[in-house]
Every structure is written in structure tokens, then in C-alpha cells.
Length: 446
Ligand SMILES: Cc1cc2nc3c(=O)[nH]c(=O)nc-3n(C[C@H](O)[C@H](O)[C@H](O)COP(=O)(O)OP(=O)(O)OC[C@H]3O[C@@H](n4cnc5c(N)ncnc54)[C@H](O)[C@@H]3O)c2cc1C
Image (cartoon, rainbow, N blue to C red):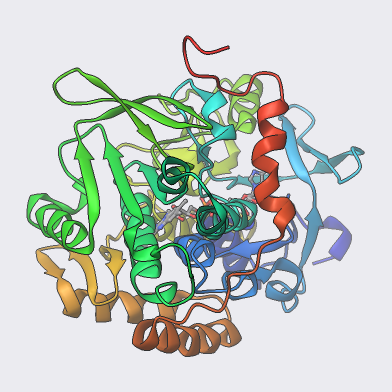
């Protein structure tokens, strides 16, 4: 087929869904443009290990140009997609520097993922960063390791305690993983490194409005996770709703309805997700419906109703019963790419998207994890080994896999975390943020 006349496919997002769509189209006679506002594909499930000093940025982020270099029909563009124009069949993207470009398409796959939700309290973000991007992971790293430094130099004992208190909001996999990691690094990695403080005295508080951590794993594994967290020294506060966050710490309404103040210099937010503004723009342009989190509702074939040329894959799509996990994103991305490939080839398009659930795993600490795969429920060391193999298998690129195995050997056997670098500018930003208008202030305080 003449190159010029090849159908054009624009893929928005180079996460799991976008990358799997690109892979499914690799040998298809189409011209693919993959647009991402980041220059890397991020292995999101291991972000917390980058944030807590085990893995480096390069071990969890693979340059998209490198990942796509053997896809001869694919071009990568660094830009943020801001709108869609279905009548003119083009995607509107903003390049670094602010220039708007239009990318024409015959098919478009929207795979831009979701962002952290603060449930209407976006002002909390200044004090309680989420963990979604590489920048978030580096910010969290600076806050966590910076807090131990600030505690070491604090002269006032209440201040020292505040710096040594880490509060996590949301007891899903990310909150549980971060809580376990902070306790482990306090107990093992940092133990002998400080002279004035005892890092092992650090308090790790985990708040959640629900009745159990890791609810998606079922009651038995959830109970095991709660036991493991408590054994690690994590203070679990269930049935507790965070009502305010600022530079002092947080206010929490407990199960009895009483609000308690927790002084904590480091607050990390891992509760809830919502669709990015792009979803609203797409819904406006196409008439698509959105769910409560703002994700785009799609048909069984992952297309936007009335627009067979617009597909949505991964976290950004909304289909009843499908969780927002990497495996769904990979399978949906692959399905979207295959569907376009079949249509371009004039073949009958694939049947409805069917998700094959291969199970899920969450890491708690060294030797402690939970794995749920159908009727198989594992916890403890066996689950931990399964977790290790699954994550090694899925890490993008052999170099990253090998590097991760070596790094994990050091971290798990000797507690060594080498990826702890942060700049002092990164911890000073807390003060800068407070100077910004709109940053959260405690009710009743000027
Ligand atoms: C901390 C954390 C831990 C997790 N752990 C697990 C786990 O252990 N197991 C599991 O199965 N799942 C896990 N998940 C969920 C899993 O990571 C997601 O389901 C998965 O990443 C979704 O893939 P995606 O391709 O839809 O979106 P993403 O992976 O989020 O990729 C979206 C891509 O789109 C780009 N993008 C966004 N907006 C735009 C725009 N406007 N223009 C251009 N590009 C854009 C982003 O830069 C990004 O590259 C975790 C999630 C988080 C946040």
C-alpha cells in the first residue's frame, strides 16, 4: 500500500494501554503517531520503590523513543493532548513551549490514564502529593528522606516528632506499599545513619475511610494485610476520614465522629482517582457519557458510542466491572490496536473486549505480600516470591529487569537503598508552596 495513503492512527498516551495498542499495530499498514506529555513509558506499579530509594528513575522509566525505535510505522511526539475535533478528525496537542499542533487521524486511541483525586479538596495537593508520575515519585522521595534530615536538625522535641511522623491517606495497594516501605527504611536502612534521632522511632499512620486495607483482595487477604502492617509498626486508622491537610499535619474524623489533630510533616495522598480534563473535552466533542470519576464510558468494543473511529483504553475508559489495573490497560490497548488492524485489513473486527483476569498482587514489606488469582489466595513469603517474579517479568526492557534484580537483592538482604538522591531545593519547596495564594490553611487559623 502507498505510504501516503496509509490510514493514520493517533495514540494518546504511552502508558500500558497506549504501548500495547502501538505494539498491536506494529506490522500493520498504518502510520501511527504516539503522543505523550512525558518522554518515557513509566512502570507505574513500582513508583513507590523509586519514591522510597530502592529503584532509580531509569529503572522504572523507559524512554519512549527507545521503546518504539523498532516500530517502523510509528512516530513519537512529546506534547500534551488538549482537545479532540471529531468532525475534522484531528487531535489538538500542545507542544512544550505552548505551540498548538493538529494531528489528523483516521483512528484515535485515547489512553491518557487518570490522575489523583482529592475529592473536591484540590488545595490538599500542596501538602499531600499523590503518586502517579515520575515527578511525584521524586517529590515523595525528597519529602520522606528530607523529613529524617529535618528531624535530625530539629531542636524542639515536638518539631522532631512532627518530622518523624508520616501520614498516608488511602489504604489501597499504593498506601499499603508506601506505609510498609517507610517503616522498613526507618527500621533497617536508616537505623545506623543518624546521630541525634532514632529513625526506627518514626510513626507511620495509615488512614482510610473504609473498614479494611486492600479491600479489593477480599476479606481473608485484607485481614492478613492488616496483621502484616500492624506487625511492621504501621498505625492503621480505619473508618477515618481526613477532613483537612496543611503544613502542620492533618485533621481526621474518626469512626466515632470525633475529629482529632495529627501533627505530621509528611502527608502522602493515595486515595481515589479521577479522569484528567482531557476526558471532559472528549465528552463535549463526542457527546460521550462519563462515570462518577469522569472516565469515558465506552461500548463493548471500546469505542465511543456513535464514533467507531474513537477508541478508549486503560484507566481512562469506563466499563462496568473492569478495575483500573495495569493488566486491564494492557489487554484493552492490545484489543484496540488489533481492532484497528482488522478494520484496516478489511476483516471482520474483533468481538467484544473480554478481560482475562490473571489476578493481582500487592507488596507490603520484605517477605510479606498478598496475591489473589481466582480462587488462589496467597499471603506471606510465598506471595512475596510470586510478586517478585510477576514484576520482574513485566518490567520493560532487559536492562531494567537485570538492574532491578540486583538492586532488590541488596535491598531485601541487607536493607541497602542506594537511590536516595534529592536536591535541597526539593525540600525547600514546602515553604514556597505555603506562600502561594490558595494553599490550604487550617480552619480558624489566619
Ligand atoms: C502508585 C500506583 C501503583 C499501582 N500499582 C499497580 C499494581 O501493582 N498492579 C496493577 O495492575 N496496577 C497498578 N496500578 C494501576 C496501573 O498502574 C494503571 O492501571 C495503569 O498504569 C493504567 O495504564 P494506562 O495506560 O491506562 O495509563 P497510564 O499508565 O497512567 O499512562 C497514561 C499515559 O498518558 C500520558 N498522558 C496523560 N495525559 C496526557 C495528555 N493529555 N496528552 C498526552 N499524554 C498524556 C501520561 O504521561 C502517561 O504516559 C498502580 C497505579 C499507581 C498510581
